[in-house]
Length: 140
Image (cartoon, rainbow, N blue to C red; front, side, top):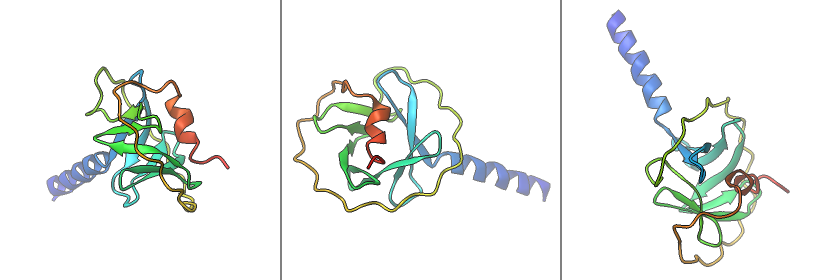
């Protein structure tokens, strides 16, 4: 019985951790993560603050602003440049992920603005900060 309980404990701990996908900036630093269990695929900062959601490949802030696109593990801005990527889509070294704080309650997503036309996606990184890009999703 003890072995079974130990197995369950290890299994559920590992499965819970596997549900979050880290997003890294151009320096390879983990800046946020995507909650893949959540049907909205919410993007949280490591402080636990929800900043955006992914809806059918579009990244929207909770304020309803269209921030960019998420395709093939890469978050892109309105210029088509990389703003962040998953470890799988990274082309270089990625640092260790920091500990996650408790997730804060998600606000309602505001009325979603229409996305602009998709630009040509480039492999160049945006000059904008990845953190500032995500924080645009919660500013008024």
